[in-house]
Image 1: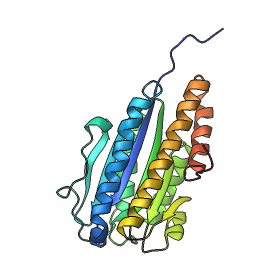
Image 2: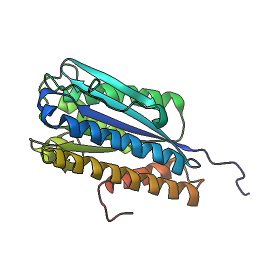
Image 3: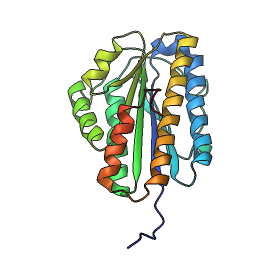
Length: 235
């Protein structure tokens, strides 16, 4: 029998976890501009893919003085842009705590909603973890392993440290090592924006061409989208 139900839209959770430690001061302007470009891209995607998905944005800023939420799972149209007042670099780098607190919060929320949902988590930092109190690297690795198995995508963008080694230690294979300069930072955010656009295009095509695939098949597709996240040859 033909399925006459209208397929549900996928809620896409775009999560940015952005380092706000003191060493980010030299690229403060570029970090603000680049993050805002990603938010703007989500606003365009909200309109472009309005029949197949709902875009949501979360922006988490972290240093050792606090892990602060600029926006949590908000409509891109109402998501505040980063400003000099909301992004003031200072203090140390509790990377594991920022990631762990964010992932636990979002996983619990998604579990309670039970909707068709896709997650893209982007971590941006210019240095090593040095201030976490709640989570260890081992705990974060286990958490990310579990979430990747559910189809979540992760990307790690870093400067001034061994980016590939750190990302691999927490089970992230999508990495960008960027030069810590205005141009290098803007180039990194541009690559991230294009990666998101490719992901959204693939998801939109899947929704239109195969609207009734099973949950298990969707997870497999999301895993593939994750594997190809930074591969510009995979359209």
